[in-house]
Length: 101
Image (cartoon, rainbow, N blue to C red; front, top):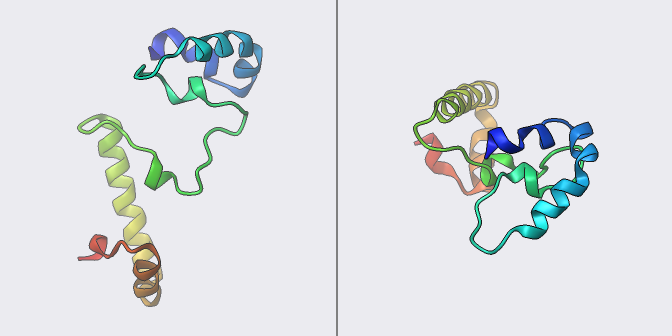
């Protein structure tokens, strides 16, 4: 799927250039179909959730999954090193204190 459609969505210019093809593709989708997120989003800034870590995932046991896990560990260590006093506030706000156990 990626090989077939990547050229349509690889840049904002390509998305704009191929918008009629992309719309036709979106219209052809049926409930239960699997697709690439980039094929069903519209706009030039990409996906903005406000919290990508909560809403976006990667396939388990892939190179990308291992890289994300490593990067998150590094980012968490950096955050906790710089913000020791903020960790209780952070965990209370997010409700996610298990990451610090």
